[in-house]
Length: 532
Image (cartoon, rainbow, N blue to C red; front, side, top):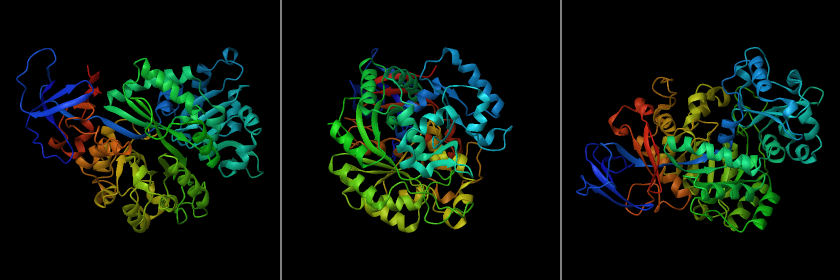
């Protein structure tokens, strides 16, 4: 019994002053009652007027990658190549490495290396003097650089050149520089950077407490790149659940490169979207339709404003995508499509219009560049848009350079999406974006960075309401699981996933939302985090 609590329920007219008590029976909320309880005993917890909200459900993240970053070299704060080399040599002693080990680091941001004036290449990595392959992943996960030892291995794989040539960087003489983008990066991770069950287990186990500290009780995660085998990934998560180390609900996406990958998955796996154990379920088929704006590889319908010789790249033809979507749909699989540019959103809508979207609740991830015609089609077709408000804190001042002033007003138009009743969620894309849902909500409501820039918010008409933002991080994500009647809100019969907050979101200025702290997290009726 959680007694003496105040409630925050999106779009429910609860007074910020009223107190309630919440009955929990096992994993379910038994009842939500106004006033204090008359019961006494050790089962009654006095919450001292703390604010209770539904647990957060992050509909788009990379849980395993987040855990691996805690275990492997993290370059996000590195500001010089010299510092990077020192970190690497201090971590990796070649004499102690196994025969097939790689030197690995993540979170690389070339642009902040002050002692080098170009993106790192295999030539630069020669300074490391390793006879082992080296792989360094960019912060956003869409670009990497490898050394010549790695290039020797990669050049022996014909599928890399055949299917991903567009994303292999070459110099003026046609030689590979060691830099790769987008699907080529995913191919390398999938085929050469596979993790064993023990490493997966430790990484996820160590990551889960960080999620609970941030009030996250459910996630939808794309981890397959680092494993290469869906059953091995799923079985490791099931082991974590069995051993009591998985205090969150997980939907595991399956990333594919092409229709053959999809057919192989369907043949070898009987389970479909939503099937699984209590905690671990099959998620969606994940596919990348384009790249990123930073690399000018997300596909636009017009040339990039700051790079007019390109409009980005489509990964698939329309016919190829149609076949993938239809095959997945007909075989009981939800589809989640990475589509940043307006050309790719248009392509995804073309494919989705061939199926019954509401039957599977298919998703478009990001949809950062839209237009009036696309908004109208989204309103009609109603796929779920998975937004990442945390992104704009680092991108708002770059977007106009990418798309130009005329297109900028249709970038991340969340309030328009909300007003047009296009279903959407909020998510983090961790570790690319900030893990904290509170930070994501702050960004969605204010459209500024944490310092309040730009003043008044970037395209302020597209700021979300507090209610819509919290709902996007809870009930809307539960809809993607077809479980909105079972989880995602504070009602009798709902799964007892809830959080206690330090302050009521409706009692503060929007600019102060980021000061809210998660005090406790409860998952399936069990208190799994309590702030010291």
